[in-house]
Length: 430
Ligand SMILES: *Cc1c(COP(=O)(O)O)cnc(C)c1O
Image (tube, rainbow, N blue to C red; front, side, top):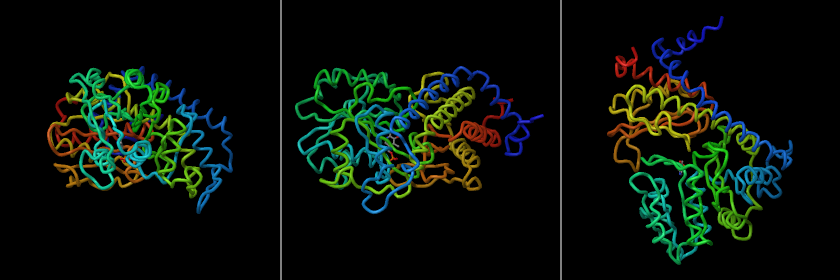
């Protein structure tokens, strides 16, 4: 007979922790079924885009040098465009990360004298220097592109009145961040993003809307281009890379927006025609094919963690029962000791570098020490199981990923195991 606990025991999970986890799981069946249905739908969507565009064995090969006539690159871009319902796409390993993709989309579609508007509050940290909120070399501000921001209302709602006031004759592009990232506000559903876009386009129909889609891909059955966005932007070492893409970023949307981005990424006159894929086509295709299932695993892991830690009395965002619009989970662990224990658990359940002990360090740009746990196949990949948090109250850990649900599960049980061993949750578990 299969004795599942024997395996967990071998990996270092105590009986109490294992049984607590199983009890939590009993109540998650309906939740998981819902995620599975979204996953099934999205798997068909990706497959159909691959069939329609006749992905062939030849597409999996790559080019070198200029990369002219790279069939794989061109087909992959068609597959992204069809899946996400855009006219065109730019999907390149030469886009180095999510921030680069966002900067590229902004810098190529804005001109001196234009204004950028964020109607959803402060954007992701790394965009502050892109925009010039914090002065930086080459920022939009240096090119005389101004920026305006309207904060969310205290209940997380859109401040329609002030958004209306902020839109003026200079407003050229509106940026909406789908995921809360590391901020304490809700993530937006595609439906809510659609409502905001309708409102804005009613006031100014020709304004361009870009959605920072990081961590949101395949969480729902629709993507923001289906509710009126002109561009969506993201990183290939998050959801759409399916854990297999070794690097890269994407922009999908209106043909003209993509043309602008391509001419900025390579050069005026060259645009999409150059850019060697260097043997990466196979990983990018296969990763995209796997992405709906991988996102599904990350969602199950996030909800499992929310339910475990909420049950233990911690404040978790999103909470145990609310709907999900991205794959990030935060848990306020209330003490330095607990935060460190949590990260040690995630690290020790990693497939790579499991024997390493994460230590808090002074990360540039942060005002407190930060601890990070990551044992990833791809450096910095946050679709793989990973966790990090600043060592200051409320000692919130942000974690995400899990290429497979079973890995997410054991990672979370291991985090709990470390808290248990440090006598931080003993009384509640028993
Ligand atoms: C990760 C992320 C980014 C930036 O991506 P990097 O790849 O880390 O540069 C931007 N916006 C959001 C919401 C993100 O989650």
